[in-house]
Image (cartoon, rainbow, N blue to C red; front, side, top):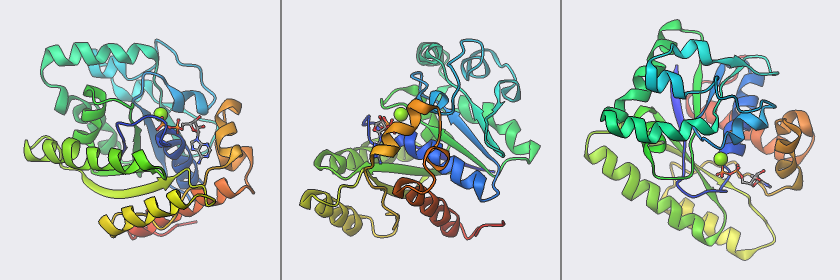
Length: 260
Ligand SMILES: Nc1ncnc2c1ncn2[C@@H]1O[C@H](COP(=O)(O)OP(=O)(O)O)[C@@H](O)[C@H]1O
Ligand SMILES: [Mg+2]
């Protein structure tokens, strides 16, 4: 079981879209995946067609030690499980800060899942803030995936998470994640700026930057409002092809080519 954090302190860069669709495409390729929704806004939960439920989210495992297995739900897709979020999860920030063990807590909570040996990947969708939930994701993950919007501020956000956030956590011994991948999102081929952002990211991070680029498409934006992933909502659309290619590349980079 590998734990992957999808994180970027900037909002609206495609974290949730990438988390949900990467999980769906990995499940389609035969992997057993758990999507952990760490964002109190519960966008990933809603995208999977579930209403946020105050009784069913990560709050209890994190705060009072409820077994994490009790909070996991099946989704409508085979091999795709979810640990949902709800607004209540925002309260974790306060409670965990008081307890002082916040950097290791999420890792402890997820550890029993590794012992069960039934999951291939745990993919965490992080909130767009530099709070405890996001830093917990970084200190729990084996790998960090950073979605970067193909826009000017995209590069600034990438530098921020790489240097200030991950770098300082690693220095303090609080994170062992490697920045495994950078995923360029919301690409609009008509703009020269988008192309120059890609070039700059690839120049600075030649190893980490995924070859697959996620285009900006109307259908990718619409799918969440239908409680669906792109491979169900419009399987023949370019966005679906892009996320399938991303899942392929994700597995190839881990030398785990598809088993189906
Ligand atoms: N490639 C894309 N093309 C078009 N719309 C997108 C794309 N990726 C995400 N969106 C839309 O942009 C908004 C922000 O994306 P989201 O994945 O929620 O970002 P984050 O989780 O980083 O805040 C959402 O409304 C989402 O549906
Ligand atoms: Mg999000």
